[in-house]
Image (cartoon, rainbow, N blue to C red; front, side):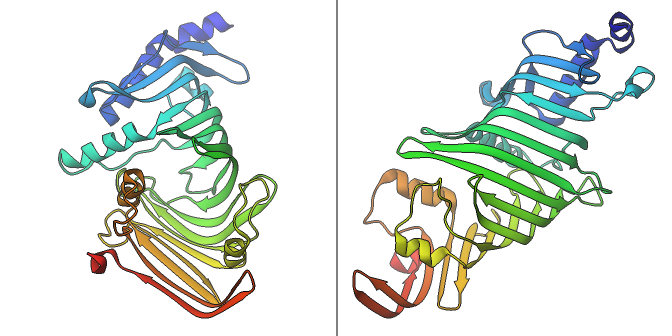
Length: 328
């Protein structure tokens, strides 16, 4: 039976065609350690071992690797055009700095091509990692995504991971969301139904309103309205005053790389307090990296706290304002 399937599907040829199509769509190079193999358990699939994705335009720098990739195929592949229904990734590692360089370079070479994602029924990831450099990574990622770009069904995602940086303790992260897929799969945009973020035992952030749009890969846009609960017990503790200021607040988040004044804007509101921070994350990261603490903080900050108590001292009507352009 397996020999007959191999003769019908021709896995080596089909695997090469899939990789060639991926290269044509992205301009990247997709290489595997050995030719694709055919598997039948738990369902018909192509097995790719040792996948490596590199950017030939930047000296062949590695963007991503995976120990193994399984591409699940419908039985119709035996008598018609091929398509991938589901994907399973073992040990994928994505190097974010190289990926960002690739995305930005696409814009600099002319009008960006419309972003593209495959419409798939399921994506599973085991022991993945998103590597940010300088000892920072989101690793141990176990992810399950269902109904990507199915206009007749909601997108669902659940992920467990661990955030680590050289100077901090490891932080467990649990994310769960549901969103409405776009009616037009060619326009990548999702309206959020629910989102929960926490440590796997408690939830810090709950949102029921938001939208993510990807007009091109280097300029995604995000808007989110959420409510904050108590700080998760498995995360490094916050100072009690800061934890109490966050708890119960309404949080709004916006991210838009095309906004020259507030690429990232965060606003926390409650009846007795308000805090808004607007900044460019790249400028802020450079400021932190340089360690020039006397240089103006590259962020607009506005804050109000009606009453603050600390070590027996009570402060009323506290106001905070900072504008880096005015500081210059």
